[in-house]
Length: 492
Image (cartoon, rainbow, N blue to C red; front, side, top):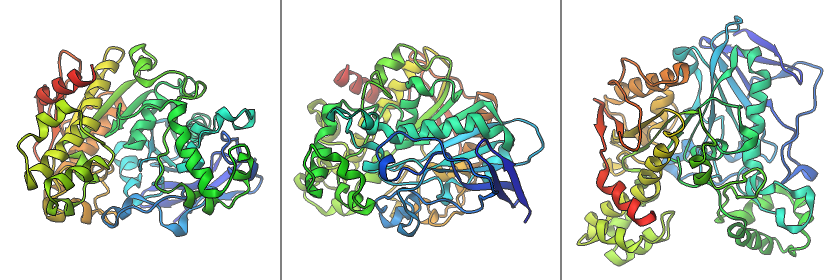
């Protein structure tokens, strides 16, 4: 294996040649957010003079553990640290030829995940797509989304969105340095799944992120959540301070408390972006409608059975009322009366379980994705997919659940832990071939046209063309009309 030394604006980094690609891991794109820099917007890293070793991944942010079957979705505790702001690059060659760039933002509800996860390995995309692939870490939980802006201390301005500002800093680093790794800074696609797609939704409307990317891919999270008003973020802060025994007027103490203690006190609390008037100065839906993301081509979609990811199979043994209570305590919350009548009327037992799964899917993923696509299609071309392929794992209970599509996009079906999630059916390879090459086509040419899938029309409010991805994919026209009409009536 040969070393690959590249000059960045902060100093030289040494990567390694592996299986036909050059890889650099753990490159700092911002100063370590420690001590006085905790809860502060990211700062540029200090330059270095020696060649920095970039052959090992940097640690991910402190984070919760995934459920056992989803172990591939979180960073092991032994590889976690508050000092986490590094990025990773896969490049097919250093020959001076500019290539398209994909920057991936991981999901994990803003409380877990990392750019080093094997499911996000960029080798296949770099080689098959002749592109430069980038992953990175951003701050999670309270380290990325603790809102302190309203406490009168200007040094904490931006604290509620520093996780998003980390993403901006990574994109700025890509703009300024990726050409040295064979990437074209004028052809950057930013992509993400779940919390990563929520992040991309926000980046599309952030003034500071303007012109840092030129296309976007949003998987299972487009429109799911833009940002919450400041008042909605104060209860989580109050609970955190109470658990740590810190008066509300003494928040500077948060910067000297061990990171592990802050993390432990944050468990179970929601951590999401905030409409702070600075980093995020306009509600996402308003910004999209006003054309904030005009000209940015988008590929977006959702999985047909998303919400099964968030439900426990043991619920099926509960009585109907207990099952409904369990559902209402999860992410989706209580169903609006009109939706409850539509989805749940007359359902019981396993039938109720299936109906609740569809209710959660349609409320949180189907309806927001279609609404997002319709709005953005007024300002740029948009392509929509629905991932229909069903996993055989867990006795088939997962079906096409949340996160199922990721290893098919990256073609990382052999990564550790993936088979326990997707199963091992023989048709996995064909589905991966289709998705992998459609995504590559979009990143390279701005349209997902490829012989791997049927001709794929763009989406609009009056031409709702959707690619249903399965062993044999096909184009559907307005496939979820009844559900979409219902949620349009509910939310207006």
